[in-house]
Image 1 (cartoon, helix red, strand yellow):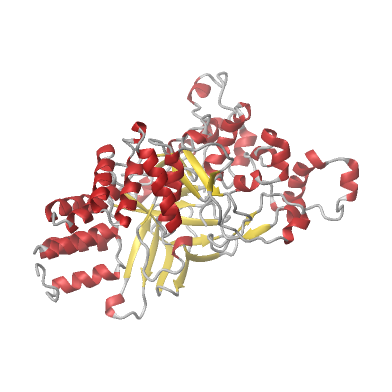
Image 2: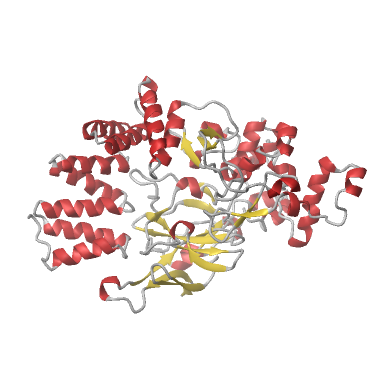
Length: 551
């Protein structure tokens, strides 16, 4: 798992881009933006540097955990190691037949994950940033595939790095360049780890005044804005929908998270088993939160500036509980021999979608309830986390995300809601809405309606690679090879993680009698995804002329 993520080093790591390794990874204390805070807040600074948040990301060679393992399903052997001060991942498939042979290595640039729960690594190709296919699981102290790739048959090498995900592991995340969410050019973020500004905002005026000008104190914000500081990273939901023109990566402390994204869960979902329920979702179900209301927040129990040691942990969290349950009669009668409150009331439960990991159950139940069915009942309508009204657009896009994975009923609901949203004039320039409707129309067999939706999406956002790729396929089926080739070439160049675009481009080029162009498209695909069996087979067939292009 990589939800948690090492020291807040200056992350000007440009290895792999032609910059010498010594220049790329050497960082001094002045490179840490929090160092400016240490003069006045030394105790907080020192304790915070030891937290998982402060250690959430950094230079790969500074945080490399050497290791190796063989993945049974794909037969690929992975090894992580240092060479000449740089971090590397090697991969090979020993004793494989020629058609499945695989051997290579990739330089790693950053690590993501404190290592307490997990760690992975990021690398770049031509300015596009990807996540390593392997992951360190800290609790079990094992290397394995990342949670989404446990059973893959081929090496997954195009796992895109998303700015919204990086937002919870690094500071000053950069906006992606047009065309792909993982195209950051030289670097995806400026500082490793979660720094002071991630919760306290821009410190420039405070520092310039020698500490006299105020700085953002989350505790003094309204409850929703106060909670948003934590929830920007500690709320996931079962699915999430961005507000038009907004993204989580642009959220800044002091703002309301609901102005950026809406998180949804199933109304009938119970228990943490089956899905890694985020802490806030579970806390909202607790009697503690229901009775305390806005008075209870994350920092009621957690000090963001320090983490208690293993020896301190039981006593620290017990003291948090006793602030509300600390009457002498309660303390003397309620299990005086068992000081670990969380062991009974917040047990760690397994989660099916986060490999090798358990998560603390923040529902804070009484022990008698723990014998109830713990299964995650994914029934009922989608509802926004915390309740409150949502637009047809937001709810429709939430259902659409389930429809993409084969949920037919969710597809019907998504279509109804999105069509209602589209009829409103303020939704006409919404690329996400049009792309989703285009996909649904395509599934229903109405190609002309789908093409109109994709074209509307591209008018609103010419860099929408999903809409461009799907439109190109429909154009090819309509006999418009010229526009189809142009569209797929654009997607292949601007979003190489979409390997299907390069494959489709190669097949169309071959079909219209351009074998050299087909070969170029397949070689481009294999540069980013070297274990793609279909691409390797197609390339071998065209190069050997077993597949005669133009017929």
